[in-house]
Structures are given as C-alpha cells and as structure tokens.
Image 1 (tube, rainbow, N blue to C red):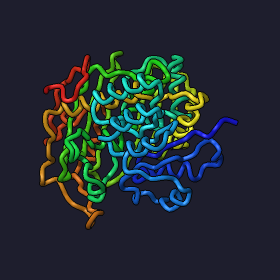
Image 2: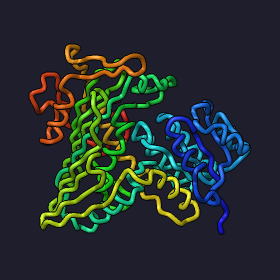
Image 3: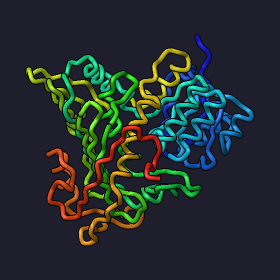
Image 4: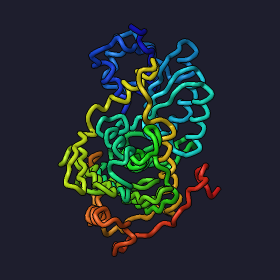
Length: 403
C-alpha cells in the first residue's frame, strides 16, 4: 500500500467546510493525512474542534506552513483574489494543487498559474465538480466521439436569489477589487453560478482536459442590490467553431430556478433541470440516453486529486479547461461598458435584516423568456435593457484590455 498523501488545507471556513467534511468523513482515511491548516479566520470551520483534536498545526499563511512543513497536495478554498498567488506559492514549495473554482479573477492570473505549474512540474486541478462527475464525463465522451453530431447552440439559466446576508458575509462579496487593490470581480457569473458557464465550454472541449474557446462575447450586466459589481448577467458567446453559447444568471429574483440547460446538437438535444434531476439526451432517431445526476459525488474532485498525486487518476479539469470561464467572464465585464441599475420603480425589498431580498419586478419572466427564445434582454422589449458591444477575444491576454 502506498503512503498516505500529505495535504495542507488552505481555507477551512466557507466552502472549505466541504473539503473538511469529505476528509473527516472519508471511509478510507489511509489514503491521506492532513499535515496543516492555513487560515487566519479558522473559526468559520464548522468542525474546527475535530481538526484541533487531531493535533494538526494551524497557520495564518502559507509561508509559515512551508517554513516548517511540506505537503504533496494543497487544497485551496480561499477568497478569489488569493487563488492565483496561493496556487503559485504552493507550487513553488513543491505541492500539487486543488484550487476551488473559479480559477481566479483575471486571464493573466491563469497565465501566471500555468507558468508556475510548468516550472514546478506539478499539477493544478480546478474544483469545478461537474467536470469530475460521471454524468458530465460520459456526456463529453459521447460528444467527443461524434455520437451527438455537431454542436449548434448551448444555453443555461440559473436564477438563484441571494439575500443581504450573502453580500455581507465577507468584505469582497460583489466587489471589483479587494481591500488591497487586487481584482476579485465577484459576481454570480464568477462565483455562485460559475460552474454552469464553465460547463458549456467544457463539454465542447476538443480533449478531455480542454474547453472550447470563445471567439467573441456580448454581455449585459445589471444591478438591483447596493453593490459594486452586478447581480444579473446575460451573455452570448460564439466559439471558434461558430457554436452559440447563451448564459443567464441572476440573484435579484424571488424564486429559485435552475441550474437548467438545453444543449442543441445536430443529432440530439441534451437537457437538465432541477425537476428532471439527470442529464438526458433525446436523439433524432427516438433514442434517449440518461447520463445520470451531475450533482452527485461532489468530492470526486478531491479524490481524483489525491489519486493523481500517486499517478492513479487524471486531472480532467485543470488550468487550461477552467481558464475559459475566466476569459469569458473578463470579456463580459468589458463588453458591457457599464453596469446598468434597474429602475427604482421596479425594485422592492422582501424580508428583514440579513434575510432581506432585493427583487426586480418582472425580471425572472424576462430572463426565462430570453433563455427560451435564445435572446439577450436588449433584444426584447425590456425598457431597462442596454446591449453590450461585441468583444473580440482573439489574443485577449490581460484584463482590463482597454488599459
């Protein structure tokens, strides 16, 4: 039996709790050992006392950890602005990395991470769990094999209400930059619903660990909450192969809907919704294929990364695959020359305290209509809508490009 993989957990509050739970509840604990926790605010960990009972050392930063220890795998669940620098630091100290999604805030960060990875001779996995899920991988295998025919149009809708407490949970929520001046670009597109934008490019990728590349993007960005960045985004991207990608994401609505998608191919239409629960393809010849539930087995990305340290697993979603979401998201910020505030007459507040929810009248209906008809809000009769410019992403390497 091989030695257990040594792991340092970077960030154990917030989403980091997911990794803590997976490790502490693992059936086979001989596969790994936690050799350190890096988090200056570790009280956000719901199982902090259990970690302390294991005599795991705690540190405020990675430099302090690496001054005394080493780790074969760093699992990073820190704020977005720290993803790139902490990934690079871990690589420079000999660790492989599993970094939680999104990859980061800017496309130049993706380049820096890739260069650091190549210098270190280690791997970097990005935690888009759908990309490590059996259902999505089976679908992608059939797409790569040509079973579904040529892709035509992919569209996704995610309407997830977020309260005032969501925006108060940290000091970078919905921010363009953090307190130190680093880009964050936190938004529904670069945080809560980033998975589903990424997935459209990922399933169309020319190889298992690659994503399709957008050539152009046109975006509309809107805001109802009193925040710096946007809470509602819609975009149309056209890939290098001419496939249309449509994405609709919003936090300023009353009712949850999604994620749901319709992926149109020459020989089949692939659908998923919360009600349907599984990814299903309906072929023109009447055949139906059920690929399974993409929401199952969320810790697969962790077990795959642990296995990859020993050469027993492949990293199917690394920097190259995940950076396409970053590229499209950066393009969206620049396509929309400004974030449009919804008319005050349409905005209402529901609830009290941290449970206050900002809702825009009629917005959900408009976005659903756009999703169903393949249009952006400015292409409908929505009076508040403003079209963004078509942004050419060929050679796009620095955000913001206009500087």
